Structure formats: structure tokens, C-alpha cells
Amino acid sequence: MKNLYFNWSTGKDSALALYHLLEDPSYNVKHLVTTINSHLNRVTMHGLSRSLMEKQVQQLKINHSTIELPENPSMEEYNALAQEFVGKMKTSGIDHAGFGDIFLEDLKKYREEQLKTMEVNAVFPLWQKNTSDLIKEIIETGFKAIVVCINGNLLDESFVGRELDQSFIDDLPERVDPCGENGEFHTFCYDGPIFNSPILFERGENIYKEYKSPTEKDQNVGFWFHELIG
Image 1 (tube, one colour):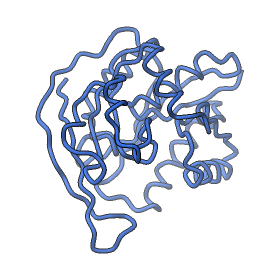
Image 2: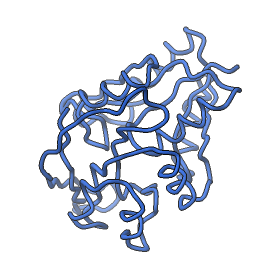
Image 3: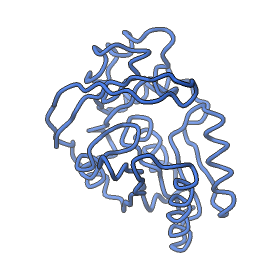
């Protein structure tokens, strides 16, 4: 069996990818890692509180670490912190890394090139699978999730805070990927076959925030977040 650490993002794709790896006799999932914005004390991109992420990993019963990022890390800072973590994994005998990516070629290439320098193999159990089939599998396998973040330029506020179910998928505009693989939406997975018990939480309010666009100069991108308390 190949010793592997998995990049746990707290959402549905991450949950399904981990499920496949745990079912695969070729791999021994020894560790999980999550990137945290230390300034906000939240999971990067998803905006989920650290406390709820910690409740998740407690129910996963797998060793877990965080990569603590500053508020606005440069790529150099991120790479240095990530390489430090990977070095620790290598020292402990783990030379494979798992990800939940589906079809973003540039991101896959970046991950592979970064890990190759440290002689670590990247593993993508969901790679190039049809996202309509994947979201169906997520629901039918018994995973339960809440939509905690949406791109406000693509979806209106009514989509954030909803349960990830067939009704949510049916309501998505055609231009939005069923798995939100282009960053259209992010989820918090609170139950499913990989968890020992469901994660308990309470619902808070919707919050709107704008950030500078990474691709368009002088443009902002708006996001709706649904606050979960736990």
C-alpha cells in the first residue's frame, strides 16, 4: 500500500475523493491537511470556521495538520509553507498526495510540478470524471452538505445556505458547473459514509464580501457566504 496524505478542503468533492481513496486498497490514507487563513481563522476559499473544520476531522478519525497562511499570502509564501509541510510528510514515510480536483488542467499541472521537486506523487481520484455523474454520486452515496459560499457574479443570494440536493442542482444556471469546479460555489460536508457521526452546527446569517479580481484589473468579484456556527 502507498502511504498518502490528502488535501482536505471540507467540501463535497474533497469528501468524495477521500471516500474513493479510503475504498482503494492501493492507498493507505495516513494524514489530512487543510490550508487556513490565520488572520481570519477560517478555511481558505470556503470561509468555514476553524472550529467546524476541527469537528469534521475529529469524525474522520485521521491524523490532521493545517498549513497556516497569512491574510494575503504571496505565491512564494504559500509554496514555502506547503513545501515545509510536504517535507514533514516525506520524513514520516508518506510520498503520495491526494486531491479532489476534477478538470482544472493548470491547477493539476501546478500541483504535480511542485510535488515532483520533492519526489512526491500526486493522486487525483476524481480526475476528468463527468461532473453531472459526480454530483449524482455524492448525493446517492449519502453525503450531506450545505452551500457556504457562492460567486455572486454567477449566482444570486438565494443559492447560498441551501442544502446540496437534486433541487439545488436543478436550479443551477446552465453556465454553472454541477460541482462548482470553476469556483462557482463551495460547500461544507457535514455527514456521509466517511464520518463516524454527523457534524452538528447552527445556521447564521448571509454575508456579502468583495475582493479584487485576480484576472481583471480594477474589477471586483463578489461572494456570498453563509455563516455556520459550531
